[in-house]
Length: 454
Image 1 (cartoon, rainbow, N blue to C red):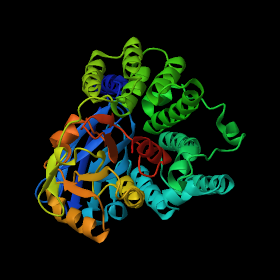
Image 2: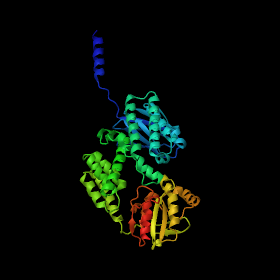
Image 3: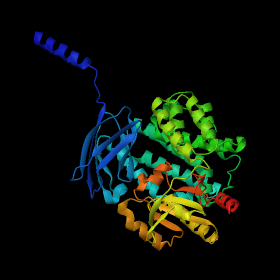
């Protein structure tokens, strides 16, 4: 009896202990036909690089703060992944058929196999350029059908946890609203109709959506992206009304929507990393940003960016280049003195760059014989050198086709602070900057500008 009592006390003591759930994820994988050196897992403020062994395997622990959606990146491929603390996640894939070959086992396998199936489903849908080029009614029909398809996949997938279903239902809502928010701007881009405007009641269905939900902002990348899209759209409207620059309008919209804190700081900083321009509003944009109490780390990064852009305002001497010419020899900016120079910084792998090619060719043809030089500078890596030469030849690209000497790290690219392509630059006959972020060939504004200069 005494022994039984001791056993009962022992069991009671152990049963009263609170279960300690691990804070890490065990993440393992095997990749066939692999050429990448590492796997990167990121999202929710987390980022870690996992080394891939010579036989294509990787394994590591991920100490995440929040359960939720992350991204797995291998080379130029990526896929969403759902992680929970304490989970053992195994993935196998073939690098040559990345999306089609993803198979998850272990914990949260159903959730991750659902995400892989969802991604494949999105690839079978209408191409993004065609979808956003549709008329308003056709577009609404298409994205409503798309949303229903995803919802059906979610409801028909077995063994999903209630927590995942709840989160994914919200993710689908955020993605759907983001499509609605993007429509007008994307339609203008893909249809090349800059005058396109949605109907008066188009936004009625989302007018009561909460774009200032701090909990959602800090737990969902989809929500965060939606907020950025929404504020950018509102900024474009206020920009037109008030005559402010795009950057200043965006900062003012965020300022009135969010209190000082990490959310406002992140929204402003992320936009200005790419959106701060060397134009007449530069000083005011930087001052407005400083007043919003950013972190010292973000302020330091944006101050460095600001100091670079100050050297690229109109009238300043342009950074120079001397690069290999596709037709032989080298071409420098100095060689083109006496002509207005329109520079296109691009790469063979860049989709938006290639979409501008027909417009650039037409521009080159229309201004042939005038004092303007069209210069295309490829920032392809050395391994893609032959791909560059082949594309220039096959597409019969005109103007001066040059290859930068060190891809993104080339001095001309770094001196202009280029972080995204295509990037267009306009330089005057004396080698001074007219516009360090000039209109694209597909924009009517570039013709207006050139006609005013020639």
